Image (cartoon, rainbow, N blue to C red; front, side, top):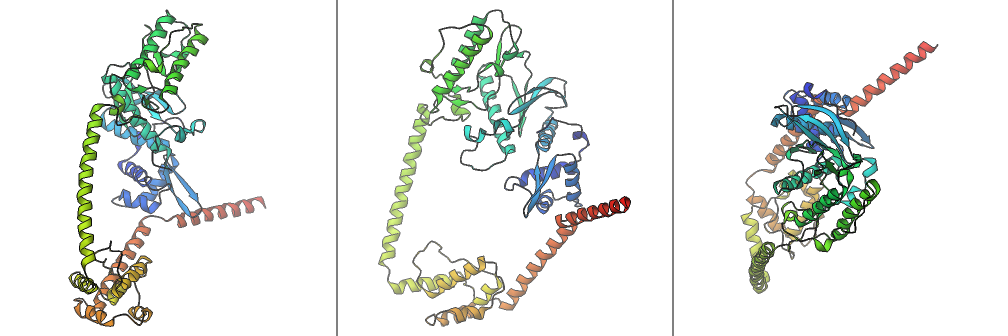
Length: 487
């Protein structure tokens, strides 16, 4: 999470960006992405993913970690910055990156220029800093998830902020104009002014105070609460006009704690004006004074909004529930008819039906099961299967799941009870159209092919074991040389 350094961005090749993207894709379901997985995702024409990973590690775009028996690479914030800047550069939103103009507890802000040399502000979300790590409990970014990376949370914050900014800007609220976003980066208009925390003298404190309180109420009329409406997120220009920034933490006025958030925003402004300008007013808005005029919280899916906010949502929900009830009633009637028909069948009919299903599905023999070709039963959801053939199939499926492709068919015959029907097995053997030896040879060929592919992949990419051995060998050489030099 250091300072943004884009000096290497122009020198990275397309293959290096391809490997960076492969690490990013692997981090969707891996905390540490193994080298073979990176190589398979990148799929470079001539291989060499391991060499590129070493170069990316040297420039701190990816990080190699090893914990126990698990080792692999993870994407750093610098690598994530490069991926976002590459996408924004391709679109023409970013052409050059300038100085850093702001830093916060969860973001960094830089001056950038587009292809037409127009200056904008680039906000890079940096969630996960040591001073702000309770964010996972305080905000609903995770929702139903339990463990996610800070890169993913930074991306969610950027998407949310761009959505809020776009909706507010289109409705005439004083916010920076949103231009573009990608991953955790948001490009917006560069506002001419200073944060209110740096302003020590204004022409009319009472007028500025009234403007800020009206902005809080106006935001509430849109159905939103800022939740961080203070002097650090308010930009004031020379004419004392205010622009509001920083929106990822906004919630709906239907949130359970909406009144507490609203009162806190109001109190922050009152305390600041009393402390900085020695101005205090008895007039200030209350949450009961807020009147909803728009449903922006519904449009941008703000935290805490409910479906009964407007009549349109109520009608849509009622229609949906009615349609679901009709479908459920139809399914229940069908299920009752099926159950009644099933109860009327005799035991002899059940056995005949099972025999016919086995004939139509070409049930496999024990030799075929031993070769690894397991075919599922025709109806998996039947709970009452009492015949010996179904029990045998369940046993074979369990053994197949245990990765034992080469089983001896004789073991199944000896393990069966004496009451099993062997005539059905002989009939299934007679019905099989493919010889068991041919099946075994086919399966063996497929396994040999997979093993050859694995060997070929290992040759193309230097394994982590070889790398660790090489490092140990270098350390031993250095130690022996220093020992000789010392004596």
